[in-house]
Length: 172
Picture 1: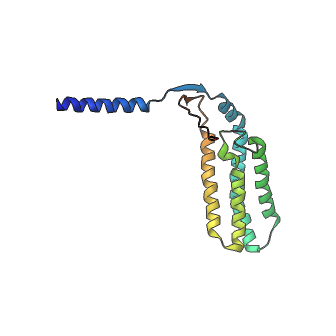
Picture 2: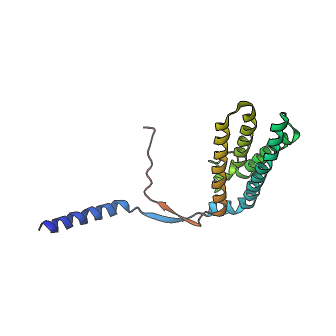
Picture 3: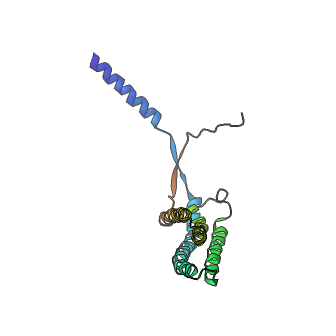
């Protein structure tokens, strides 16, 4: 009788755990995200590639600035190019990513991250703040990887939506 009770207790635990763990979900269309992806993909690729190539080409400009010790037209041109790419991104994705959701949210601010990294590098010559340069560089690399992932992985046509959504009234 002892073994029977153990099996019954085990069965009840498994059954009750399974019943709690199973959530009712339904499959819904993800058309808006898919269409946004398709509409923004080519311009996103252009902005991504141009940001990457500008940053890579900026190394020679940085070295020249470092050796000469003063602002050159090339330094200004690189800075301006990052700002123009940031404007292109804002035109494509909008100013507010919460109001204008996009599968490319990490790409939307990539030019701004590149500009921040560029400016940190320039200012490091006077402030010797290597930590700031490294932090900006790591932030740019992380964002670049996320952007590349978003480019290479379109959103699914359908997503599962749970019926277990509970709205909590925080005004009371």
